[in-house]
Length: 255
Ligand code: GLU
Image 1 (cartoon, rainbow, N blue to C red):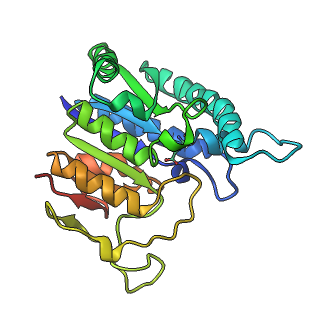
Image 2: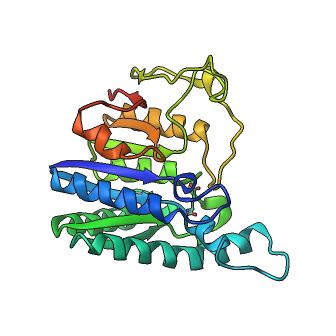
């Protein structure tokens, strides 16, 4: 069994108008089912709760940013997990929801308990679907974004590979919209791509390339391969792991 953590960003799961992209979500479920059939044990870290909730509800008065996160994630997470439940059930695959917070990653009982929880799920062939517990987390103590969360999960669970799916093909040598820019295919241990990273972000979630780069570097340093790839490309996960015709992506070689 190869244990992998797949993180799906809010941008992958939403359309340009901010609505949940059910076709994309369904295709990712098909691909994870394929991985499972091919001896991959998958932990799914899925963003999209806030984005999903936002498009569900019209609020009549102005909410501050914390209230928005709390309200939209509370309804969005239910919708998201329901969809995953229905789609995975078509394959006879069980999923379980894990909502977590940064404090659960301090060494100690909570950390051990959380790891144990996901081990018992995996032992019983249940796919953990992980997200931050956005409804109750305290702003200052939150994960930078779900990339950081996915990195912590990959380390905690001793994964072989972490895949960060975003809406671009990888880390570029310049602005991705500039035709002269190219995707950096391979990053050696200890190599920094800081000079290439664009700090601007147009995203439905909190993350961006800078935080992906930071997470990818530190996770690769702990011996886990990290792939940054485009979750909007058809069949991306199958193509990455089937070995034929590998799609463009950035790969951080582990230490
Ligand atoms: N936990 C947030 C959500 O599900 C996403 C955080 C992020 O954008 O990384 O909406």
